[in-house]
Image 1 (cartoon, each protein chain N blue to C red):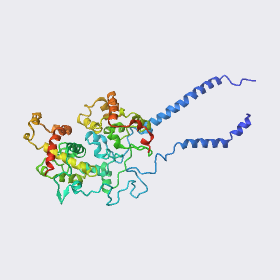
Image 2 (image 1 turned 135 degrees about the vertical axis):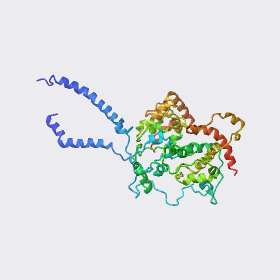
Image 3 (image 1 turned 120 degrees about the vertical axis):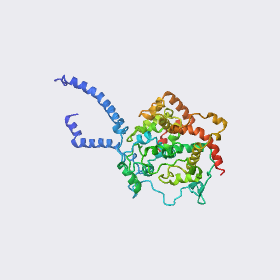
Image 4 (image 1 turned 90 degrees about the vertical axis):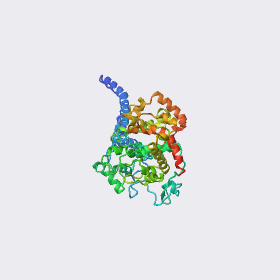
Length: 235
Length: 242
């Protein structure tokens, strides 16, 4: 090939076209239309709706399928304007354990693992306007279970509603665990069987165990509370 | 006819030969290390947020369970960023005058969501569901790193597809008993910052590099059977791309 034909092959214009094609091929790998698709994910922003949110609130009075809540006992804890004193379903030991699990997540930060109102927030919030309640008062021991359900659902005093975070079934299970806690802090030695009395350590038990109470409690109280709630449902 | 190549061309030939080997190699190594660096993956890079929320304070120091705020993680694909209502269930009572919390109060009062900068995200062509991972014994920290050690939240893992597949091809390596998914955090809280944890448990809860021990992996592989995880289909395309 002579010099002239080479020059003809690589004219400036041809070189420019070639460079353009090559860079197009490079950029083609950079498209993002699959990364960012025209669909809405939870909590995503959206320019389409006036409030800027992609997730839409349901139209007022919408009832999702299977969520028609006609059972006042189960969903409000109030029947004929009175707090119910029976659980809407039979409480088994695993329900109390589920209640303990949920209690430790949502309630113990304020009410403490023992339900004595000495949770971490109560200890750290030096200027609390309202101290978290202890469950171990005469008033709350006599309160019907529907009251506790109603407080979890709607809040009370400084306490916010936990209805968004705790399903109705779980709320009842938490109430069953509150009953177990109340029993644990308000029972006499004679309430235990001779065998259980033998297992009790002679040393006085103080608040010190409260931090680790989560598990130790379940073992001893779960069994005791099982009997208690069975009794409770006869009210 | 004169010599076509001068003697100096010998050097030039050697240099170009070695460059032909070195340059592509250096390009591959260089580009892939940029891809894997925090500059691209954002791993361990704390993001600015409208409110300087500290997981260290709330989870480690106060011992609040993940699910207090991320309440849908067990039952939904989406773990849930808490609404301002959740923040205010404590902060209507404590730090009520803190200027740092002004955006939270404003959001709650005006019912306008806070706009956080997202730390962990997958592309839109990836389907991911938190609840199934939780239900099969994947600890939060396996994917998110030691969140309770983060002042400002950072991304714990790069979320490369190879990283997803590493577990999907052999989940036994990372799966732990179901009750440890949240139980390890409780166990960590009960002693003075993890003194009661085993080496691999500590690496999971308190460091950015989880090192499952041989026993953990052997136990994990048994759990894979017990939990009915179908490993043979777990790395099929449709599992994550649907």
